Length: 275
Image 1 (cartoon, rainbow, N blue to C red):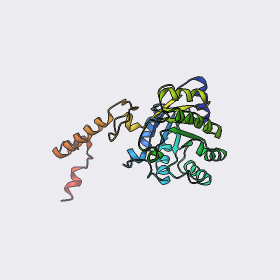
Image 2: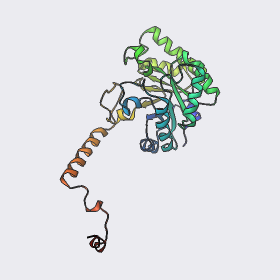
Image 3: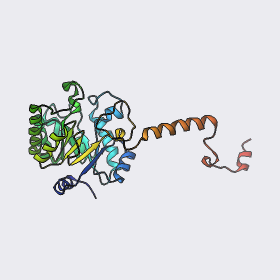
């Protein structure tokens, strides 16, 4: 069944958990879609796991459009959400609407995601007014990593916890149809989930959220530069891939590959005429 803003809302009302995974290319998106995952996030995490940056700051609109379009071609039923990269929406409401529109038109997104609470509500209101669905993102917002002083759990003090709850209500009021909660204490995430009518999608926020999201390279053991506490490895695909690459090198070097079954034939009399 095609996943939409409406099916997300209905899932929360029915108490059905939502699933979201990242993808950045056609082949992976197709596999994730066929597995029945509700939503595919084309995250600016591609800066880390695809482009090799230390953070997401350097990711551009062109990067997001390029990878988003590839993912959208592979996803038939999953709702494709594309991240708005750093400085594509912070500069002005006008820029936010224009860039969100580009992600929809050129990246073929089903929705866009942006980081921040009350301070970006004007952008959320304007983007949704333009007919573009928005997912909000609270807690640890990677684009603000320099302001946070590193990757740290958010909302641990009373003041910070209250602000997170207020921000969740604010982005809902502004028109966001869902909100990602990243690196938030589980009990606080549970409270936020009860306080808002829109689905909460957790990543390092406990299992009471209305859904979960993970970076697929993390959950498959394909990215080893850094593994957050909240990641569970559902398979060690990285080790399988490495072993296959090593085996390929060995067989090429020994002449075992390609074998006869991998060759194309030609008639002997044709070859004889070439001498």
